[in-house]
Each structure stands twice: as structure tokens, then as C-alpha cells.
Length: 337
Image 1 (cartoon, rainbow, N blue to C red):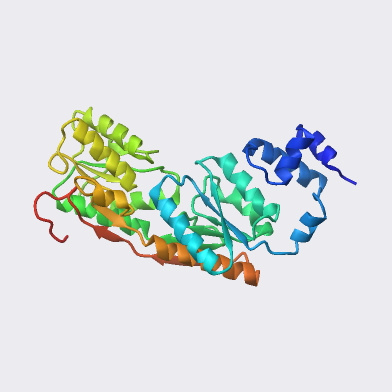
Image 2: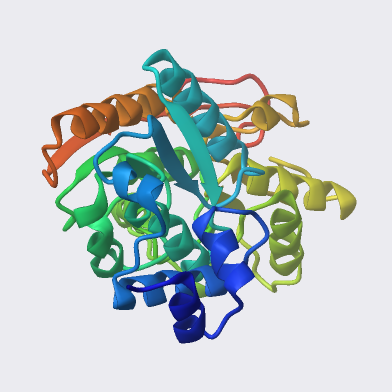
């Protein structure tokens, strides 16, 4: 009979560390968790009778993976999900990945340990081929982030259209040197926004200049750094498309510090229509995402899948986006575009 000592020996960790992982104690590194889970799998170890019974019972708990809650988009998304989960008799477990592949895999192990009934992926750091290995242990739903090849329900937004309408607005204001600023270029969300951005440029006979590309920008601080780089350019862009209102706010803050007028000398457009876009001076033009509707749909689809046990199955739900025009891109009285 396999014991906890055997697991500890194979994992190269202490018995107490293995116990903390099994009992889901906090403050255990993702790397150690991964070693314990791998050892348990290799040995076929089942922690105790309670754990065995969990294989045939529901926890009424679902998890949502987000990169960072400090991002207002994910904060609002999680809040809306929690309201909908509670309304349906489920609890929501919030798991931050901090953009770490290893941390994400550690959270996915919750499915294997039967500590949650299902999981929503609001972001995805690993390749789908890696994540899909957890499907036998419980249903997965993607929300916001997406992967076209995934055979699971996906609730997403028309990010190509979002990138297109934001860029089209800047072009109609007469800009020809446009910068593109994104949280990352590997995610499908970022890629689709860039598709929309490029589509609008092409319609105006323009092509994107790589030196105007800024990636891995997620926060106000990152936005300030982006502005500093722009300000040092010989022929700087006259407008910036950003992937979040936070980054847009940072760019505007940096511009103020250097005495650059927004939108007179530099137009800035955000994404999400968060509170910060309405209280900045100037107020930020942005693309509004129906976050609450997307969150509700994600919870409803996951709970339905948990109850029916009909997974994996391929489903697609897509919500539209809307351009909100404010003072960061238009001088003088606002006009419809």
C-alpha cells in the first residue's frame, strides 16, 4: 500500500510539505505542488477515504483562473462571476496565475484533486495541448481568452472588431503614425486585436511600423514607461492604441509629466471602459466590453456542463464591442464617428 512517506520520498520533499499540499494549505510554492502531484500520479496514491469519496461527489465549488486581480477588467469579471455562481448555489475560487505557466498548472491540479467541480480559464499561459490534459478530470470553459482548436465552450468578444473600430477612429481623426500597445502578442485576444488594427491600417493604405509596437504592458506604470519610449523617438507616433484603460491612463500621466498635450500632440485610446477611463483628465476614449454578460454566460455554461457531465464539447458564444469616444482622442466638441 502506497503511503504519504512514499510520495515524499519520490517527490524529494518532506512529509509535512506533502501533507500541506494534499490539504491545500497556502504558502506552498507551485513547483513543490507540481512535484507532489506528479509523485502521487506516478504511485497511484489516494490521500484518504475522504479524498476517495470526493471522486464521486460534487464540491459545489468552481475555480476561475485570472492573470492578476489588480487589473480592473479581471476584478469586474470575477465580481460578476461570483454573483452569478452564488445565485446558482456554487462558490467561486479565485486563482491568480500572475502570468506564470507553472502557477497555472498548479491551479489546474485542483481539478485532478477533485477540489473543484470545474474551471473557467479567463487567461491561459500554457499551450492548449498542455491544458487539455486536465479535461478528463473535469469540465473547462474559456472566458475572454480563447483557442480556436479547443473542444470546450468558449465565451469571448469580437476582438478583431474591437481593434478595428478603435483604430478606424484614430485614422478618421487624421493620424497616420499609429503605435500599438498590448499586454502580450501570444494570446489570441491580443492577436485578434492586432488583426483588427492591421485591417484598419490597410484600408487607409498604411502598414504598421514595428518600432511603434509595445508589448507586455499591463499597468499604469507600464503605460508611463511606454510614453517615455515614445517621447524619445525622432518621429514619434501621434496616436496610440492600447490594450487596457490602465495602460492608456499611464501614457496620459507620462504625457502630462513631460508637458505633452493629449489629444493635441498625442491621442490615446484605451480598452475595457473601466472607471479610470471616466475620471482621468482628459477622459479616455475606449472600447466597451460587456463584461457582466460574458461572466454570467460563462458561469451558466460551466454549471450546466457540471450537471450534465456532457464534456468535452465545442461551443462558441461571442458578444459585440462598442466604441466610446471621449476627450483623449478628440479635441473640442465631441462628434459621432
